[in-house]
Amino acid sequence: MKRNTWQREAVRATLGETEGFVSAQGLHSRLHSTGSPIGLATVYRALADLALEGEADSLQSPEGESLYRACSTTDHHHHLICRRCGLTIEIEVDAVENWATNVAAEHGFSQAAHVIDIFGLCAACTGASVTA
Image 1 (cartoon, one colour):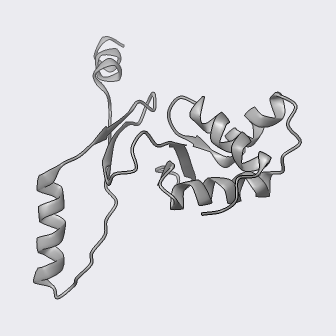
Image 2 (tube, rainbow, N blue to C red):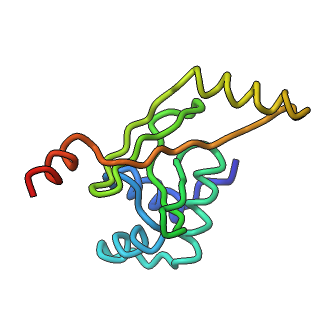
Image 3 (spheres, rainbow, N blue to C red):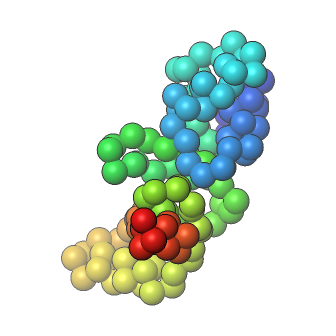
């Protein structure tokens, strides 16, 4: 574990106050709007460290940008993510875990790891699409 600097704590706190996923640039802008002198490279490093340690979830947007959010659990889990509003729900799915282990074993792999994020439209955005 990395030592806890004021910069890392500022990133952690701001990420925790942010709804949904945010880019490093977006988080950097929020920090600067509160007067923080933290640099963008420091924000990138802190987010990568928090994700590595399980304190932040990270995923790639459909455009390929890395996005982060404070993680509510350090246990392995997956996400349902609304493409329109960004609503994110953490889910645990035993069937996915079993499938991943079985597929890996069928091909001679062990110690398999995976990341699954399911993108779609949440109920509210689906309703908005129908009425629009």
